Length: 193
Image 1 (cartoon, rainbow, N blue to C red):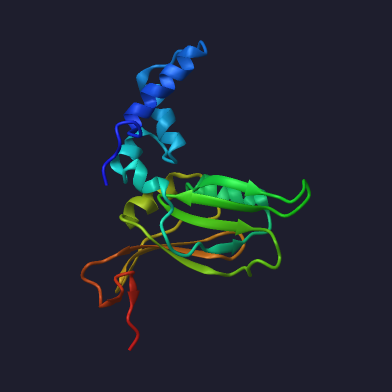
Image 2 (cartoon, helix red, strand yellow; image 1 turned 180 degrees about the vertical axis):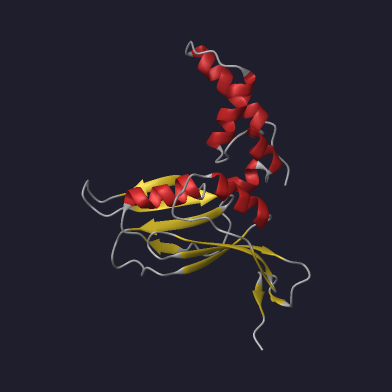
């Protein structure tokens, strides 16, 4: 899939600079690139250009979206946003005092977090495939999150970084190994005997 010249991140940065200049705000090209990267859901420009192209991230991947039960918005954001690096895409409440329902995204992985008691039960487990488990684990260790210091475990099917959220939901970030056992549909799930 090729990037259109009008949707390429560098072109978007030029358009952003021009739009801001029309309103009397001047920013440098580098600053505009960083802002575009953030708008496209990436941490910075280098992360954007190293990852999938913008149009590959723009369309949600088909598939299931795990729904995870949470009980405390502050703790959920501290864990999913601040520690794991997910971006909060949207939040919904029926009223100011109603439970939260939100979507978080990181590198194309979408999760729905809910405080609604009928939506899900705590204690779910989710496998998230990643490209580099060791790099992800090092990233997590740089965060000042006092409730988790995950390691990397080598299983027959891959390298796994496991973390549990404050609500007993377990997330297993899996880097499949090419030398592992036969995997069902090449999704990192080992075949059962």
